[in-house]
Image 1 (cartoon, rainbow, N blue to C red):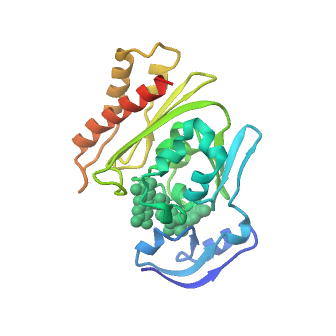
Image 2: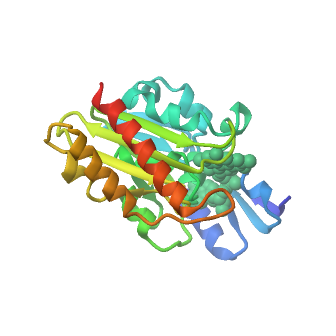
Length: 265
Ligand SMILES: Cc1cc2nc3c(=O)[nH]c(=O)nc-3n(C[C@H](O)[C@H](O)[C@H](O)COP(=O)(O)OP(=O)(O)OC[C@H]3O[C@@H](n4cnc5c(N)ncnc54)[C@H](O)[C@@H]3O)c2cc1C
């Protein structure tokens, strides 16, 4: 269990960031479900509750999701349920249970870049962007490639255009962490494809060649095979949960299923 010496509730993002930078043992507080699993002694816990970051709104061609939204809010929201065949709701559904999903927050989950994340692959496939207080706005894939810095994640943005999407994850038991997962999306305007593989066990990554292999082409068995070969070139690792070879083989199976699901729509 963690311990917090003092909790502060800044009135502005600038004040929250200043508090974060004031001491290396100060931490932004999300839903605290993950922090609670550690033994950390936190000097100042910085609650973002006064910053009104729990919005989900449609504007200027994007769906903006505030950092303080919980997975539960996302799953119950009509915009998110209708977006890209409800793929976000489907991706979050296997995460533990309703109580945890009603607690954990979007900003914490994206900023922490967990390798096991079920959220990041689907956001990557959908072409999401993120806004950070210091770092500004950028594509999610750019943020995931950057070195870890101290910052406050303010929002996640989904492109508000029609997409067909599917996600798959492999778990040994329901509510366990994923062994490997995958998300596939096809933009229905440009007909371009994006495929992301997560829990490799490293953090989620887009399959670089997927778009050029599938976009604008008839979806043949040969084209899918080429994508699966591109997936095999990603780096997979071994840990207590699975070997790299097993993850690589299962990533290809999950991707094939997800591609076929999208193609059948
Ligand atoms: C038992 C358990 C099982 C889980 N299983 C899964 C799973 O199967 N699949 C899956 O995808 N996820 C899983 N998760 C992770 C979960 O989905 C959340 O991603 C995770 O708990 C972080 O959310 P939180 O609100 O609890 O963050 P917190 O514990 O509050 O914070 C986590 C970190 O993020 C920082 N932080 C918080 N908010 C911000 C912000 N706005 N900007 C910058 N930094 C911030 C905190 O300082 C901290 O370092 C699991 C978590 C738990 C506890």
